[in-house]
Image 1 (cartoon, rainbow, N blue to C red):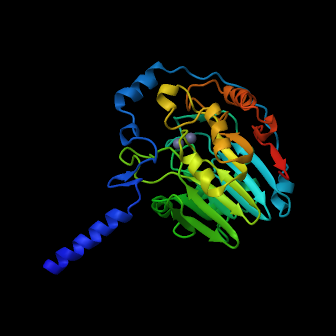
Image 2 (spheres, protein in one colour):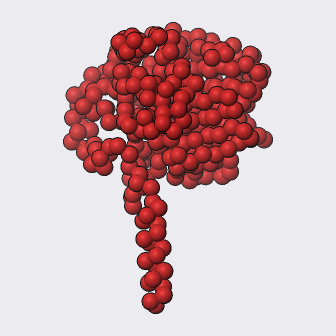
Length: 339
Ligand code: ZN
Ligand code: ZN
């Protein structure tokens, strides 16, 4: 009995020592945000819901991607903005998609919730075969069940590898994707050939149902190709995490950083950065080229005017004395080549 107790003490105290500080007994917390700020009380949520303004519809210009080229391209580097946080990045013959969302709403139901204002730049059958699908977290504007399932069905003979934050593998298993899903904790990495994929801390939260707040992790991703580094920031408030990421990786060649969903600040600040803070993230991770995302796609996700994020971004870039070309936005459907 004494022996078992001793073992328990050793085991328990050992696991206490090694448990990362963002792991708690009932889920996950951020590195630099006090736990009490992790979830808003009902009164605060109602205050926002009942004081908010509806966004005015904006008719964004849509470009048509060169689909035959994208489908057959295995040599040139391209980056296509499909909408919101969904990008197709083609590099050295590898096709990577971030937070794929091609559905009409960011919602658990098809009849309510933030509706897509700007249609996705392509439909699923137009996508080239994907090698890697990167997921930042489980909010409905980032993890879309029907898009994920359609990608899986379309490529059933050769499914892509799904890279997800810790705890999310179960969700994939529940929808029938039982293999080819790698879940990582912050600072863990997964190697495929000579490419490395790192999950990194960002300041956000998770929830998909009524009782699962922060039960699974959220993350940004650093993709290390042999001679190029991509940073996908996912969804995030501004925090010291980005200086930590900058210290660890020294620089990023290409960064995808959210610039929208920031208003009202009293409600959104902890979890969604402003365009000015996005520029600070660009500086903190020492990014050579950044692209703004998470704007101009879903109606009434938050309160700022839909076309305000790129305008504020441009001003913020200028006020820091940076070359305006180093942090830009794309038109929906726009493809950059040879970045
Ligand atoms: Zn989110
Ligand atoms: Zn989001």
